[in-house]
Image (cartoon, rainbow, N blue to C red; front, top):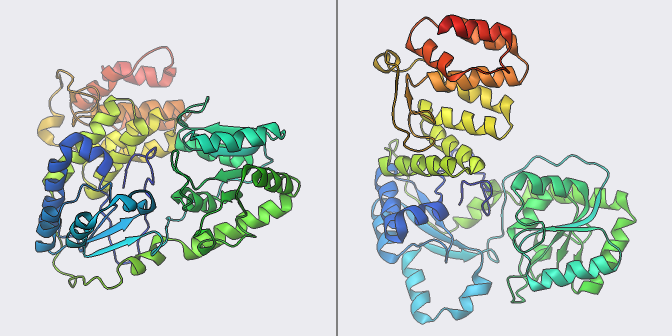
Length: 445
């Protein structure tokens, strides 16, 4: 999957009780390591952490027969869950199919095991400001659909690569969905007419947004027509849109019913047993070890994303590091920094408090600055000792920004004189600091 919240199918898996999930950021890992390095990482994960199952998504997975055999030798079954076979499989020859059969313990598509999506909180219901919204690349067929709606006097908004508004972050996409009367979900791909259900269908239903979907052979395997109506041609889409724009109560009923069905029938907790049908897994065994290579990769990807200004991706990657190692103060500091910069200050506080806990007595006794080695390294953005000084400074600043000055003062009052206090005082200052905080900082200096 991808851990970047702006990536396709970010964090889309919920798993049944009794399972644990290791999220492998394939798209970013391949760019960082190359395909061969990525395969070696997978083998190291299998050897060190001994997962029972590895789920891959051909043809985007870079798995070879050799890598799969080495993973199986370590006790990991390798299952292919292919969601774009209708695009690529017609070009596969006998040799390709033979290699796929050798690589995977089971090979299925989303026609055989349907899409799934972890439950999502419903969007707030509000009066629509937009008639129809579409989020996705500006393929020619999609342009034709939006042009037909616009010519019919429908208020439309299209975002994504190729549209005038350009790329839309996930949070803004959800805002658009909440403000729209109708979400348009398509079933095409580039300039080919390949009607197939896409993951966006389930994601939209989980969010509780009313949608009109493009017809596809497997659509009714997910939702009946009274929950997700469909269209074939641009003219039919215009008719459907006019019909439902005039019937807000019908839209609300359909959206609520589709969300209820998605939550009950189309989660990974329900789908995983279908995916594993006939796959022999080894019995539960001793607690696994840790892949240092994988932990290091996650930290490197998080640091790179933060340095590049991709703060949503950095926060998610740092959080994944902290999930795997709750004692990693540098990861907690990274999550807190990024959430604060994203404006999610309340959420940042707990992470910054985790990061500001007692550290190494030796490191806490030294006040020093080092040449910057890139944002998000183990010593944070300032590349300074003591390590706790930076997250404490962010914590105090965040409390001040939230108007919680008394709490900010209490955090400073808890600090004993020494390098940590001096490091916090050196990092904070400026005219925006309230007098009570400024007086404490002066004393600490």
